[in-house]
Length: 101
Image (cartoon, rainbow, N blue to C red):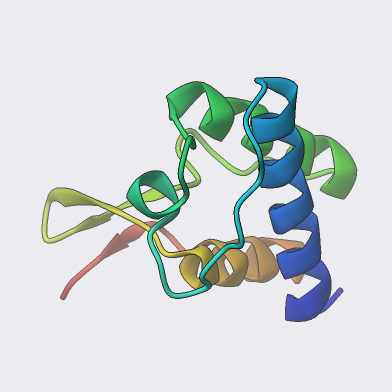
């Protein structure tokens, strides 16, 4: 599975979550942080989106797919960062979420 497929799955899962809660799905900027860059995307949407992706992909995505830790501090991930993380897990790479800036 490639980055384009993961990107499409992630965008569809985010859109479905927003639509289930009565919100319209905005165009997603791949360079924007999902948590504060996608209108209406909240913590519940994050959980629902993660579970949907885990079910479709058959993998564990961890506790917080949309936040990573850099130098001991949490930071919201961009859409492309989430895609990259999921892609690494799908392809067996599974890198950690802690990074140094």
